[in-house]
Image 1 (cartoon, rainbow, N blue to C red):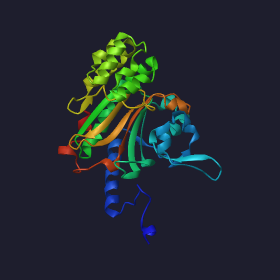
Image 2: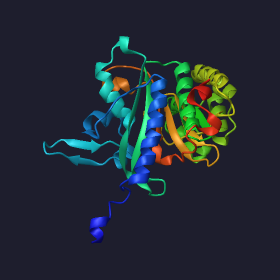
Image 3: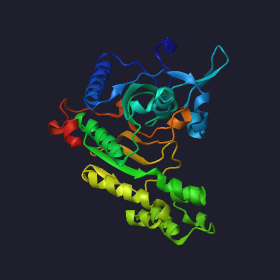
Image 4: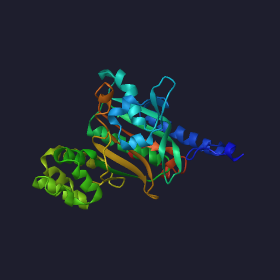
Length: 317
């Protein structure tokens, strides 16, 4: 009898109260995104694996459930919305369509459980601006993400960086630079012939003391530093924080700004996003893009009006 009542590890049904809660949150997301000019796209839950091979890595391969279908094709269950949006939209994009604002919602299923083994099946809602490579689009998406979190009763704190800083250092001096920054063992870059200003930047990034002036001092990143400075001037420092030492093991498909939205009270991460200007070209049409994704199960939704009646529009302003 136990076999008839249990489910695979990491998945479960949502019964009446939980289903009602999810739909309520979903409606609030959709209302705010539509008011902000985003239109919905609906994506399949499975797709062929082959189109995503250029961006696949060890992590994404481990995350994805893959199987051979009846036609002998390798297919995968959706584990990440962002590449699927690019694959769906890129073939039909025209200059007259851009910039385009879209949002999506649905389940992703991942082999590796998240949150201490709690879930493999996650309900996500996200949005993108496609065809706008400007700093203004970065600002708009970070502000929109913070506004959505506030409207849903969170006290948002957005931590951001530019993944291109480390990517440029890696292109110039090799993958050992990323290893040094992730592991905090700077000795691994000794003997690589790194010039003085780049070495000083790497050292300060490793120690967590780097500033935009340090980034700007190395000529290949001068423009990046100026862009980050412009972005910072447009953001409320009470809600947004630049962390130059926020270095990950790999940038994935991100090419620029990278941000995470936390609830300032619990410090729980509730959303993430960034810029991926090379992704659409892989599917046929070059287009800049920036977006974010919320995992609804990570939200501890408060009052219906948001924190102190805050609305999305008020936070964005």
